[in-house]
Length: 116
Length: 113
Image (tube, rainbow over the protein chains, first blue to last red):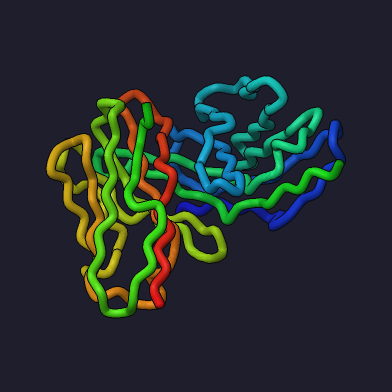
């Protein structure tokens, strides 16, 4: 079964500090894509970062970076210099080919609180 | 300039009623999706359409019927609403082969009383 596990329901970080959100997934596919989405209270889903499984280099977007460990099926998100605006639900997602298209499988989410 | 729009944003209705949620994307994407986010924030795919053709149906009750009049629109009709249908419903779109990012609409919060 294809599953995505986020073992931390909630995390807190002090403003300007660094926090890491964990994600593991289960798949038998060799070609897939991984994403982190942010959902603030406005409930809009915002793409934070993505990683292609065939790329060994970890993706980076400004203060956001991932630690992608393909053999361990792990895809953690590091947020550096945390800001109040980073407070949100964060969802890890795994995209897999199916029925001639692609579908996302989401984790259960981690609520991130940023403390001033 | 909204990329993926949904109407309405909020919907409150009684059990047993029939309701529809509309989704439109102006990105020229080929593929559209419906997701359900429950009260615990869990997001699960319901349907996917590619160029007006149903591709994915994730064992959703047949009270839910998606309709795609053209590739820019994917509507969701729900018959005989139940309390358990209360959730946020998200529409999303994706360009097509070779592109893997999905663009989400703002969501529709459905409350069934």
